Image (tube, rainbow, N blue to C red; front, side, top):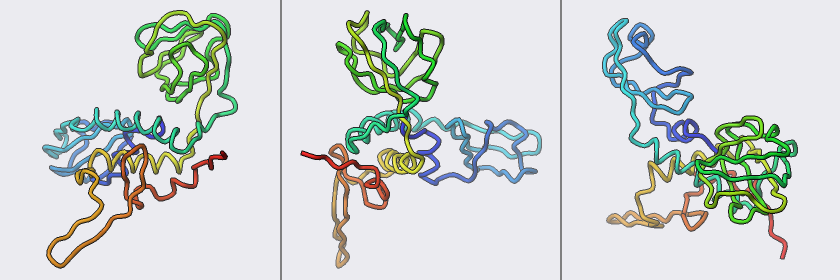
Length: 232
């Protein structure tokens, strides 16, 4: 995906610290933790400390927004590829095969070439399929077999040659995408309102339209650097 759940949560900033590993009872007051401490783990999970007692700390996982954030990251991948008119192809991540079969569960088989140029976490584009053209995220790769998400609209053997391309998203673009996802999940409450008046105070927001959704310019700062001009 163009950004991760971890990046989206980190960009929101409502945390007290980050960790490589999920917390256990040793993440206690002796290490500076306290009841109410909000910890973000690099696997994208969020945790809140209930009790920081020495060697007996209690942590609860906060999953309240996880599904929404993941869906936002997935949707943002396609939105920005289309909006920026750029797949950001990785030169080493390209292949063509005439032996592609699409199965249920997002499984794709290749009897000819295999999928050695792709890795879990890649975003790939399928081209010239009968019904499955589009962008997918790789979850597993084995010799001749690859699993992606979302699942394919149509299953069965594909006719002709299918082309696959992996994307390489610049770090700066991933950071912008993460801000946009965080805005969608945590801050989008104005229903597109572009201005407001309260007594003698009023303001007007400058919004950037992406896929029919308005984003404040501070959220999308740096995005236009990656937009390709369209030549008509």
